[in-house]
Length: 249
Length: 206
Figure 1 (spheres, chains in turn blue, brown):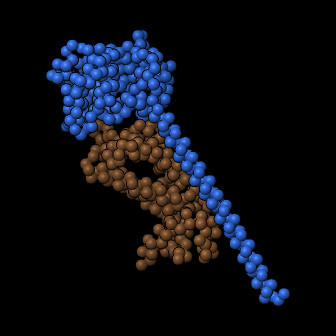
Figure 2 (figure 1 turned 180 degrees about the vertical axis):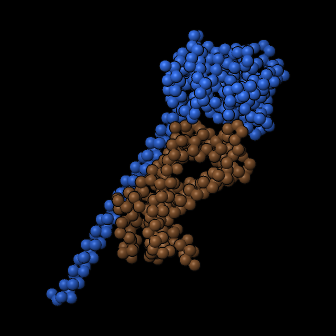
Figure 3 (figure 1 turned 90 degrees about the horizontal axis):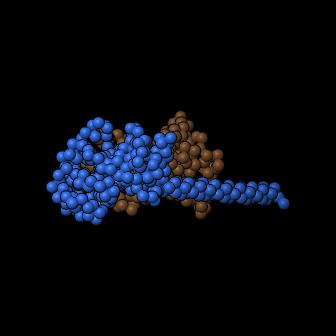
């Protein structure tokens, strides 16, 4: 074999070897990328699952704790003798996030009250300063004051959130408010007249302003546990339960 | 045919080129860090993050719910990829697109006269009493982060990147390789995005 030919075949061998190395490196690289992609997707899936768990509501299993409508329009839900910790719930029937809070964490609050772990005080207020959204809110708030029975009040409260109108259009019309009251089982004799005449509109507005001032409410919903405002954990039923149980110790 | 690699095509003197990987690294840490913080602030309270998405009034209900649940974990995962420098280019592209979407969303809320909180780092998108919307600040911040995403996508992976350690971006520059390679798999990550790079680079060379 001549020198030139030997060189040529050596070059070919080296080239082939390089080619093989390159292919192998390529394969390794693709394996790494694929692994990372799979792990990343798995992490997304796990996070998604965690999110869903975090937003999972409890079921209201037992009967509710006794509910009392107070003269100032606030509503207490607690088992007899339970006076702490106190959970103050400031909410507006027209506020979408209040509705979401009620849907998400409402059952937890009710369950804990029924278990005798907390005294809950609902403060239905109007947070909105002006416009159609304020009018809606005041009408609903005033209507809720027409329900003297605690159990019926709670049913109406839940119903109002369920039926919450959009913030941009007129809703919570008096006719609807009367009808939903009946559907929720309100039996007070003067209910229809009370709602239609908006008898308690001023009382509700005054109470709202007083509460916003005295409790320094920045927005609704606000949950205060023993006077301290809760953060986002209010929207995470299991964290909320834990916070309340910790406060009950 | 695309024979240029980033290095050979990059304009500017040598000093700029040697500083560039550090710029990428810094961008990765900032953008990744912000994404992780933002995602973490939202992931435990999907109810709020769904509300925050709905507050923009841009997406239909079902899609808003998907985004509300999916976005926080997306942000965290992409943020972690950026910080450790894995799949850097893809993570850079995704984060830049995310930021662009946020800028558009906030600008649109502003233009429509909505009064919302951007919900960027958590919360349900409602403004506290007496608080004015901070659209301009939010837009400038997210646009800055978008720019970082572009830098990362353009000049990956920077120093201290797992991509280099694991050989995802080969440590040796691809100069010697890209003569005939039309290998199936390589194209998936490389070609498409590199093609995107080609255009702006040429514009800069004018």
